Image 1 (cartoon, rainbow, N blue to C red):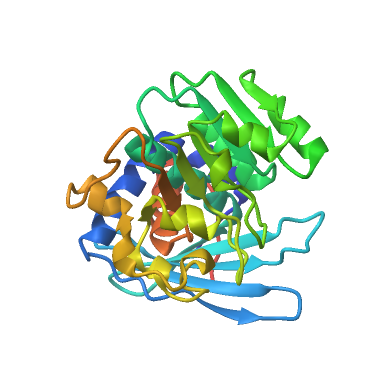
Image 2 (cartoon, rainbow, N blue to C red):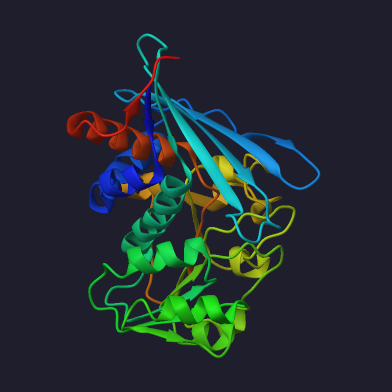
Length: 310
């Protein structure tokens, strides 16, 4: 069995290749070519452990175990491992760090939503939250051409200052309202159990991405969801947590369009320059599967990692 560390994965996982693999994964998901059961969890007094298995034709099966302990201060609130299983024999193939994969694939999926759904020629982006996902979103969005300003807003001022220093286009906002009111794209990257933005702050035609997960609440306001063109990874997002998103509870699955449906040209993306589009991410096992498969194949090619006998 191949063991891969976070440092090794950072060297192996090419963000450009990941974007291509994720697009194919979203298409496969919407074409009902994948077997992905609902995410489940066990709860302890201080956090939760979630299990996310997935199968996709032509790929090795994967299972991610991710812990969510929001009160962690020094160590990450989200930590994960991913196991790959041979789809033909059931043989365990690899065990790898899943924390970095989760971080990168989440931001990469947000970037895909921006490329698909935001207005053309966007110039200003707001990132709300300065933690791990805020940093990953800054890295991914920094690859877009034409971006002139990236506003950073966070309750953690030192973190926000450090994040804004990483990109010459980044500016530290005085408030969330200031960041959002200037933005063509707003990326919510918090673990807030309550909404962090208001509808009246938004520009017309804005695109919003939201990756926070903290049920029974969440960072994305309900009135914005209900008055926007809504997009999700999978219709499973409308199921109760931990399978789905807390912010989408009570809404019809038909009120959301899957990214794969847009990529397959089965349903419309943005319909006008004035409408607000929202991508609500719940985190999907497909994203872990395609990323882990990319990492494993590169590791085998490059003879990276440590092999052990179980």
